[in-house]
Each structure stands twice: as structure tokens, then as C-alpha cells.
Image 1 (cartoon, rainbow, N blue to C red):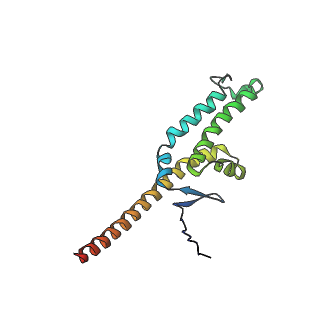
Image 2 (cartoon, rainbow, N blue to C red; image 1 turned 135 degrees about the horizontal axis):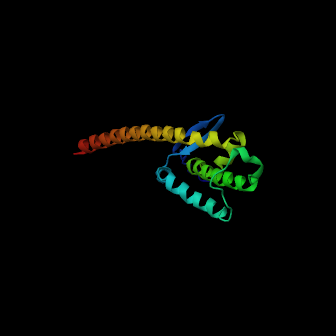
Image 3 (cartoon, rainbow, N blue to C red; image 1 turned 30 degrees about the horizontal axis):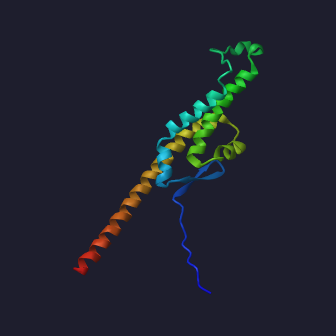
Length: 153
């Protein structure tokens, strides 16, 4: 019987801890394209959410002193559109289903919305660090290759 070959693949990325949850940020080149276009992709998701709520009349201004006359369904629909937009951003960053996992543990849409900027900044900083490390590793391999090539001559 012949022996098989096994090659392990190490995922490109790093863990990101949000509260008690640890998520994975995929820093592969394929995913970075999406990450750096997150606003554009999220806007597409927002358009989809708005399309769903197209037939709902959102009041121009809400008088909090007149709570009895506020249409709860309209408010819920507005909340849902906003929630879908925020959910789309988390799912774009961490993969499908990430928002549900986070929201289940932290059902506070305002807090999750406010966390998006610090998350994005921290991830961007980590990506820069990784790129610097990759560049150093590439230079090291390049020097080794050129040394070996020079010895052959």
C-alpha cells in the first residue's frame, strides 16, 4: 500500500475579539478586495434592504412627545433597514452569519454600529503590520535566492 501525501494549508488571517466572541478575519488577497470596498458592498446591501421597505411610509419627523400616534410598524421597518445595513457590514468583514452570532450575544444595534469604525481601524492597522512582515519575509527569501544563484555561477 502506498503512502499518501498530506499538505497542510494555514489560513491567512487573524482572530478578532468582539466582547466575549472571537471571530476570524480572513486576510487573504481575495477577501481584502472585499474589505477595502466594504462601503460599496454595504451600500448594495442597503439598497436591497431599502427595496424591501419601499412601500413603507417613513415619517419625515417624529415627535417623541406624541408617542401614541407613532406607527410602531413603520418604526420597526426603519429599524430593520438600519439593522440589515449594519448586519451586512459585519457579515462582509467576518463572513456570513457573523452578525447573527454577535447580535445574539449583544442585542444592542447602537453599540454594534458604533463598534464598526474601531473594528475597521484595528483590522486595517493589523493588515498593515502583516504586509510589512510579508515584505520582510519576501526580501529575505529574495536575498537567499540571489545568494544561491551567485554561488552557482
